[in-house]
Image (cartoon, rainbow over all chains, first blue to last red; front, top):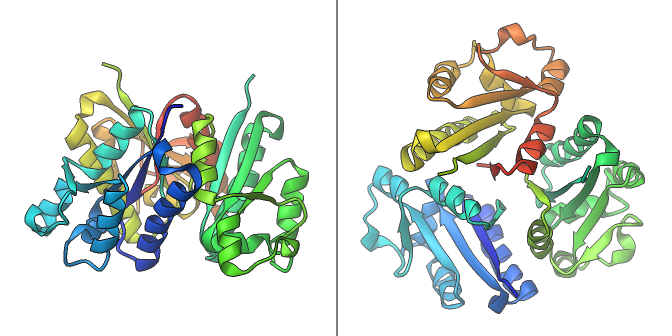
Length: 115
Length: 115
Length: 115
């Protein structure tokens, strides 16, 4: 069977939204099965802040990464905020822009979720 | 003509958001015609609360159901909130998870709307 | 190469959301290149207010229009708010309903972004 490929958007730093996105990812894996899924979370605007290794979400991100989830940080946002990539959780990938990544992924058939 | 198949997401209990979602559904039916549409609203996280028959939205849901709109409640959320299915408006369907349903529907070609 | 066709949704008047949508559009053009993009922003519910020529966003809209971005205003909303089309920035197009436009565009293969 072909895998479900799902791209999640996070562009806010509201803890309610962040927890919703992260629990959505966990519940999706539990429901459809990790072996049937490719998941990427794109963080941009204030959403990139969860990727900082000083963030309270760093351990959750690390665990999800271990389960195969990919995390993409918007370079535009990092530059605008003056955040060096060294301050991000190891394994987080850079994309030229978060919005561009969301469009590219969808143009390749990925399913879009905006929690 | 093939029908438009549209899945709506509701994961909040903010009355502004709820009213927006419900009026979106009504306006979509008015614009494209009920005979050309298959619509499902997926409620999860705090969004499931509108499905309670004690909810102030119960009658609107009942009316929309009569117009052919389907309503799907996230079992994960109901379990977490300790809500028995007997407390929901009659006709609301159960899905294993709201997020899984949104992904499955899109993988079958449904259009996604997040009001 | 085929163009990326992207439809953006705006249904709120929160300045944070408005600025996010408008900067998303600018960043998308910068990332993927205007020559590779067709972009439409659909404004409905409180989102139509940015289209008023008295709005503080009128000049940005005018500039984006000059870059080829299309703007579509929901007639339903304008009627409900008693806004005559003469009060909108020149070039903004009318659609029967914002939600219908978002569904129609997606049914024609457009990519959906809800910032």
